[in-house]
View 1 (tube, helix red, strand yellow):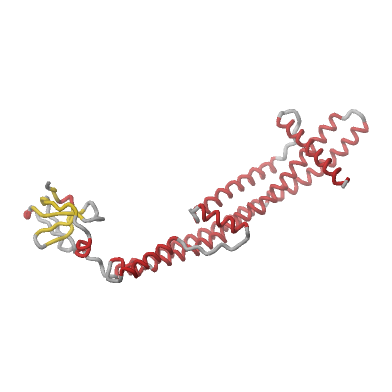
View 2 (tube, helix red, strand yellow; view 1 turned 180 degrees about the horizontal axis):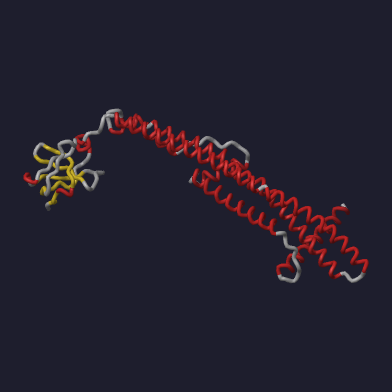
Amino acid sequence: MDFNVKKLASDAGVFFTRAVQFTEEKLGQAEKTELDPHLENLITRADSTKNWTEKILKQTEVLLQPNPSARIEEFIYDKLDKKLPSRTTNAELLGQYMLDAAIEFGSDTPYGEWTCTEYQKRLGGAEREFLHTSAVTFLSPLRNFLEGDWRTISKERRLLENRRLDLDICKARLKKAKLAEAKAAAEHELRVAQTEFDRQAEVTRLLLEGISSTHLNHLRCLQDFAEAQATYYAQCHHYMQDLQRELNRSKPVTLAMEQSQLPVTGARKARVLYDYDAHDKPHFLFLSFSLQLITVYTVPGMDPDWLIGERGNEKGKVPVTYLELLS
């Protein structure tokens, strides 16, 4: 117990002496041993590596998971070293909703055409695989550097700073020593402090030089991340092409069906200003300046640049710019 008390008192004394030295250096009242330029450059480079790694890691997490609550949940599970429960992606959920709607309304309705949106769920599956691959090949290595290598480097740098303070304290004591015996003791302490400082500087230098290999490792991780992105977007493109082909093969919804299901809005007369050839365009109305007046109206969801035109038994879409709307 006495030993522990003495050690605690000794540690407190060392801490207080270092604090005094540090404060006097900040106030310009004490000399400070400078690190060699090479070591200073390594420290600056390491700090930049740490800062940019943190920013890239954080932004990548936001990119892969925009939901802050979900990111917090993932963080907690990671710290607890537990497997994150499987979560349905938004694309999978959308695909399931579309499929359920198609089943409920039936195959003979426009919603029934959505039975081919199984591809939307495949998009969700591709997204899930992309998120998993990115987490393993990119996020984890960056996080491991910050939580492993960087912590070791930071610990050794703090130890180097303490050794430097101890060295400068010994230098100050030697300057203040008057008696020969005191000078001899101060010189001995200075030699010991210099040796410990040099040893710690070498250890720190070796760790900091390892940052170069960290850069190479991060570059390989970036290549893996880019490959995962390319694979994911290629899958998305492939699935969407398949979906478009399925939709094009499906029976198109005719204009007559749209008009029978949507309420007519704002029927009025319009004067034809120019000829409009619609012979090769299904569901479009042929316009001729010589025919003069037609009846036009719109339906909800229709492009504002187009109207539905009627002339006798003929009906079809007409461009607004070819007409003069009458009150």
